[in-house]
Image (cartoon, rainbow, N blue to C red; front, side):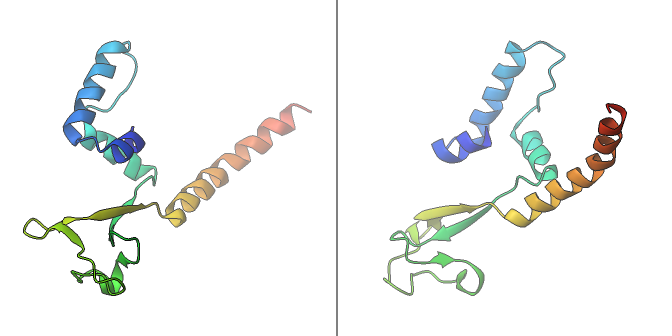
Length: 124
């Protein structure tokens, strides 16, 4: 659902409406988040977070780190914003950090490993 939100430019309200439709469609024992905020909390707990970074409209550079305060691209001199009054970025990139995902994966694997060994040991 969050991938559709990112790809199609859905608003938080549209996600809330979709979740409401799904809750009405599925049986009562299906546990769905109440709204986008609740869904976002679940994904944060699972380490499925992303960071939104402004980029040059011509894909020359990212406005991140020491360059996060710049208003123009250092390479092609293009404006960072499509609307300078509202400071709306002309182009954005979503960065999905790998480290928290790997940490979560390893943590889950370490917790499941003793159970797997016990299960395999009883089947012999």
